[in-house]
Image (cartoon, rainbow, N blue to C red; front, side, top):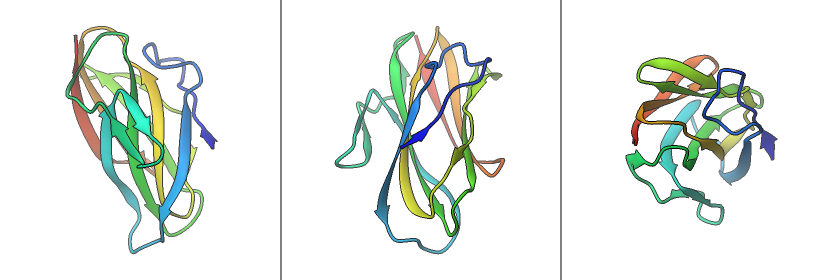
Length: 134
């Protein structure tokens, strides 16, 4: 298990979220993030977000789920939340494992607005998704 905690700016995030790492296949060509999904739960046996939607209630708990493909151990992955275009919080870096790994990051979203979720690989945003809160 890899642990992730949201920084001081993360008004809407859990104090100490957990990113669960599960190897789901062999390493392949390329490095990066794929398969970004957001839902109200996480199915560990299927490695998918459950209750996927584009609209969520204020203060709802959600799961940010994504796959990291890496040819080496240790790339840094971060999840950022932006509300109405302003940065709300950034996770502490997740040290990704070598190979293909699925991570889930539980987050409590705050009040109403448009929330953009960004997932970065070694400082470069590779996946984004917008959700509506409220």
